[in-house]
Image 1 (cartoon, rainbow, N blue to C red):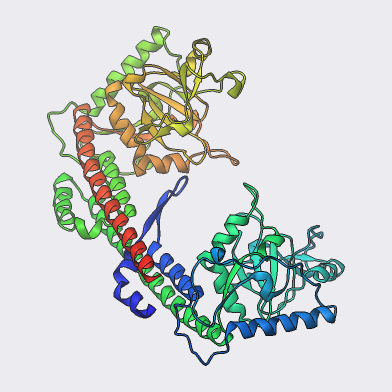
Image 2: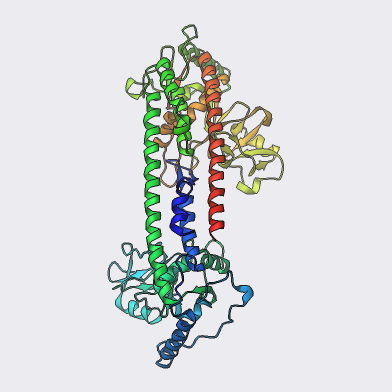
Amino acid sequence: MAVENLITEHLDIWTSSVKTKSTAGRGRSNKLELVGVKKLRELILELAVRGKLVPQDPNDEPASELLKKIEAEKARLIKEGKIKKQKPLPLISDEEKPFKLPDGWEWVILQDITSKITDGDHKTPPRITSGFKLLSAKNVRDGYVDMDICDFIAEESYIKSRERCLPEEGDLMIVSVGGTIGRSSVVPKDSAFALVRSVALIKPLKISSFYFKYAMDSQLLQESIHARKRGGAQPCLYLSEIGKFPFSLPPLAEQHRIVAKVDELMSLCDQLEAQTENRIQAHQLLVETLLATLTNAKDADELNENWQTISQHFDVLFTTQASIDQLKQTILQLAVMGKLVKQDPSDEPASKLLERIATEKQQLIKDGKIKKQKPLPPITDEEKPFDLPEGWGFERFGNLTSRLGSGSTPRGGQSAYVDKGVIFLRSQNVWNDGLKLDDTAYITDETNEKMYNTQVFPGDVLLNITGASLGRSTIFPEHLNIANVSQHVTIIRLIEQSMGLFVHLGILSPLVQRLVWGRQVGMAIEGLSKKVLELFEFPIPPLAEQHRIVAKVDELMTLCDSLKAHLNQAQTTQLHLTDAIVERAL
């Protein structure tokens, strides 16, 4: 099957095979990785180096003759003193050949077809504000050289560096140190720069630089790179290893045909990618627009009418992780705006509930159970983000609690941790859907008693107040009985504990998350102080309505989770189909 047919006959698979990449922290979002198009690009390169991308021409001069010319050119360069004689490396045995090549092709190692494999200056020259360009790994992009972010060095350093490593048009630069190891680019025409050690320079002889580049991007060469790299957090690729890489060498004429075909097909992939991204963006805008009709509804009746319209098109609207997450956020926003369930005029209004909470708080102060706090200022009309239904009210967060404040670190820090004892919760344990206790620290009963002010009990709401997990929240469950928390987690102990579930979902709503991220303090690390948190304007429904809201949110979140499960299953099927097509093509 021609590769064009392979693309067009399975167009729906390539463009619909996606995978969600989750990112945490400020501006949390789900980004889609276009796995289908990515695999298609990989397949094109794999077909190229296997000799399956373009037809062979028996009139082409075979690669064996090309190798003779390369050897003759090497001998000439050595004789003229332009390159050093390379130490012979073992030939590729039949067992080492990854796959069978077409007639006219040859298996070689990189040293056989290059005049030099070197890298940039190992002793980095001093930088200056302007002068001669010095490139590093950051400049080697995927297929091009980024000259806009260059460092500069003096002429003396530049000349010395280029005595060791002289980048010329057609050479291949490949990142040999760091997280982008294996990324490569061809040195463009009319380029003058020096390199640092993080970039290796490979000088191919009498072969197409762009076939060399495409082969270097193929799975065969990328696997060789990552199999031979050394080091952990800062991996590196030794120059001595690069020359040993296996390389499938076509006739020179076929190399040029392969490059032209790869260019053509990669351009088609670019178009598919752009069309898919445009489709995803248009879909996202449609979802945002329709969900806005829910939050803009004037009451529960209008909301229900709009919901019925949207629910008829669930199969079209909620087809990505991001759209389902948007739906979840809309549900939470409707909950705190009083639009999710109908109001019941027979419910005791929130004002009565807030009066009881204030009375109970005064009693706790009188009994010496909590300290008297400075009165919080009333909420002005300007601070209210939207109008609330009858029977609701805004209240300062601090007025709802008997305890509001962060935990602390035990004396001695991590040295105070023990194998078993009282659970010591940190921000990595606090997630919106519950506590995750895989990575749990423990402290002794004695340490826990000394830290009595930061003990948590069932019903307490926990909120992460620093770092990338700022805003994550959960309720401490009944079955754990007691625990303690670090300074990165705040304890919210409500005076009316039956409000806990509503307060928790309120914290997760866009309304409160905007407050959390908008009013944080601290430059080096995001943080939310008690003084800021207690001033939050929090919407309070009648207690009876709170329970109805929580039940409705649970019902709708179950629906969302069901949608996600079906979507995950469909995405997995698409990925398997993509893999099957690739496997069959090879």
